[in-house]
Image (cartoon, rainbow over all chains, first blue to last red; front, top):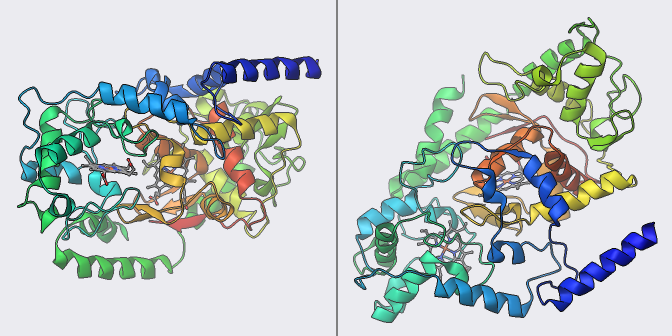
Length: 207
Length: 266
């Protein structure tokens, strides 16, 4: 019995590997695991059980180490996420940096305890240093202090930055940064505002 | 009594400007000093010991003969070996789900009632939190020694490991997003790297904890529930298979360290 199971598991692994969607040492959740997982949560407020349904980027980025995403998969994730970015129709990437600073400060949004009608924040300070004045910043992401001052404010830079915030996985598969536009955390107007916070020469980020 | 200034602490921490910098450091120093004055968790421990010994429920029985894994009535050191497989229940249990089980079998208290108020607030106190405080205090100083020998415990560990890296929800977060690297923090809060021995030991052996900011004693089930909330996941069901799987993963990774709770935290 045990041997038979092992054989089956082996065949399954080989099949999946042959299909090109599993890395070596793959330990991703199985459909049976997912049943246990879903059975362990209760829908609450805006957080329904469908939040446990993973898209490709989430599933392929969930391997416990030492396994990692296969190179081909990473390229696929980046390509499809890049193709899904919606840039502002009027081509304007920059909004109001003052509104952007408030968005960067706010950690509100998307928790089951949050009011779904209130706008979400970006919580950028949770992970990044941005302005010099704000000393309460996290270190999960790199410091963005003087981001615009060092990289300039060209149209290419504006488009890159807008896209990077809209969907970081378009540039780096399995990034730890949320896909703010892609997943509907921030609106177009809000993403413009935080893009301005990073790039506007008058923003505290660039002082 | 600490509550007033503690309520002001977040404002100071999250406040901006150079002025806030000195002020924040002052407040943190004061806060640390306050923590030396003893741990209010002792109030929960004392109540928990009473609850353990009281005759309650339809069967008018106490919990004193509840088997926490080391035999009926053995409390000392029991927590350091949990979660474990319980043959009488046919499943892996952590302390909290075991207590709900014993309330059912020994005292005749229905599951819905026993697992009804698991996280207390103010005058609405939770017996589970009190019992957990007392029972865990009886493992203080005992070296963590969770065994994966039983296949169901091993299976729980494996699921816990997978879940730790499972990304989902609107923010694409997994536990590993916040607890997968050393030396990281969110805002000013240090994040233990729970994938490493040292971090797992620190993170696991200091729960339950009296949370100064809430004025409540919180258990490991609460810790998991609250991290899932920050992860933007739905509400983790108390005592669910997944909650025990994650607890097994973290408790086993803490093996070798002396258990050191109930602690006191921010």
